[in-house]
Length: 219
Image 1 (tube, rainbow, N blue to C red):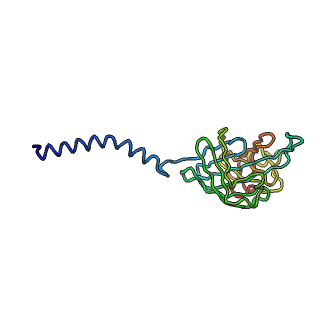
Image 2: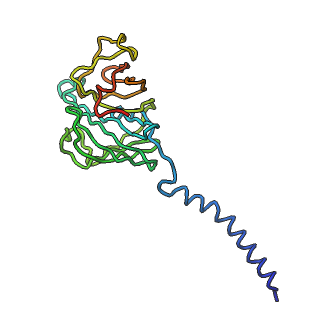
Image 3: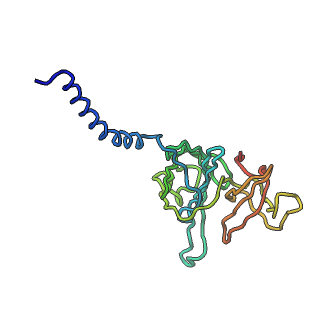
């Protein structure tokens, strides 16, 4: 007959063996729990339709999605375009609640969310009213694959009828190039009251503009 001590030692040995099996399992379960990972957006281009930015200082996620409709008689010529700006906060879960703004008048039109991981981003809006939803149907969810990483820290729309670009963040750096109200720009850097921007049109243009010429405000 086994003594109390020998029985106890047998139980402890079994528990020890069981513990060795449970430790990695428990770790895997904890790793997969919502919020256990700090998932951050990957800034850059997504299929040339979505430009996404992430500000590590404010945790803001922002960007825009743009769709073009080409003419049937001339496929190389754009007949109509639709662009929508979105701004929200990333909380580390891979989902950000955002506000959607119409690029034409930069007015808040609806809310929704952005779901993201290392390979793709999905935009979903609660409503299709207030913007060109016939071109850009966000209510059903728009999924885009990651294309190219870019150092974007913000996205905004121009909020003045004409905004001149500067070659450097000083008044003497003014150039002849300008943007129009509603143009979407990606922000590359900040210096005092200036932001370094990238505008993606027929060609990519970089320059500096004042923060006050953007809406909604940045930082």
